[in-house]
Length: 463
Image (tube, rainbow, N blue to C red; front, top):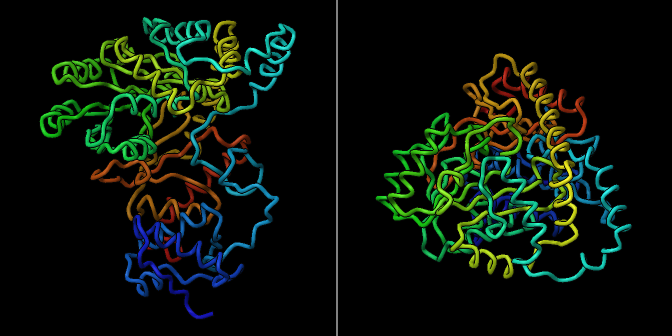
C-alpha cells in the first residue's frame, strides 16, 4: 500500500493523541488492514509535519491499546482483528502468564487473600445477615465499619475518630470526593511536579487548575510551596509524602512539619494520599497527625492488603465531613456494604495485618530481585515499596525507552505520564514490581530493561 497519511484536521487533544485516534479510525474503516506495515516513525513525522518524538509516543500508545504491534528489526504492523469474545488486555487487571511483561501497573500481589475471602464469605453466610449487605445504606451510617477503619488508621499514629471517617469505594473515589468537596471552577490545586496522574484529570473535570511544585530527593520543596501560595492563592495541596508516586521518596518528619507551618500560615488545605503508607514497617507521622484541622487523609486496602478489595477511607476535619459525605452520595451514594463488611472484619480480626505483612515480604523479595538485576544503574527505591524510579543514561529519553521496551515485550511508564502542567519530565521511568504474578517473568523483564539501557540506540529509536 502507499504510505499511510493520516488526517489530523479537526481532532482535539495533543498531536500524539490525534495521531492515535486517526490510526484507530482508519483501522475501523478498513483503510488500514491487519498486517499492514506502518511507515517508519521518522518518515511519517516528515509526511505529517510532526516531531519524531510525537510520532514515537503515538505509536507506543497505539501498541498499548492493541491497535498495532512492533517487531524488532521489521517495523510496526496493524494487529489482527480481535475476536469479540476475547477480553481486551487494556480492559482488565488480570495477570496473564504470557504476552508483555507489565511493569506499568502499581498493584500488589492478590493471590494470598483468596483463602481469607472464602472463609469470610462462609462466616457471613453462617451468620445469616447477608440480606442486610444488599440493602442501601447512608454514607454516614455503618458505625462498625467506620470504627474498624479508624482503628486500622490509628496504627499509623493517627488519633482517628470514627465520626470523621467517610467510607469510599477505594482511595480513587476518596480522592474524587475530596476534590469535589473542596474545589470550585477556577480554583488552583497544587501538586508535586511529578504526581499521581489521575489527579490532573479529576481536577480538570471540576474546572480547577493544577500547578506542579519543585521537588528534591525528599519530595516537595517548602520554598516552592511558599512561592506558589503567594503567586496563585491555591485552594489545596495534594501530595503523597510516603513512598511517593512515581519517585519512591518518603518525606522526613522535619520537612512535613515545615509544610504544615506553611499550610497554616496560608490557610491551605492538605490532601494526603497515603495508599502506600502501610507498606513500610516504620515511617514518619502522617501530615494528618500534625495538622488534623486542615488535612484530608486518604487511604485504602488496595495497595497494602489486596488490590480488588475496594475499601477506601477518608479521615476529614470535623467541619468538612458533611461536604465529603455529600460528595460520596453524589458520586455513588455509598460504599458497597458487603465489601466494607469483609474489610471491617479483616481489619479487626488480624487478617488484614497478616496480608499486609505478606505484601511487605513480597515487595521486599521483588526489590531484592531488582537490586541484583539493575546493579550499577541509577535508580531509587524503598525496600518495602512496590515500585522503583529508574533514571536513564544519555542518550536515552524516557518516552523513547518506554516505546523501545514495549517493542521488546516490557511495559513501563515514562516520567511524562506523571508530570504536572508546566513541569519538566526527567529522563526517568517508574517500574512496578508487584503486578506480575511470576518471579520468572519479573526476572526476564528486568533483564530486558538492563540490556536496553546498555544499548542506548536501537533501530529507528534515535534518542
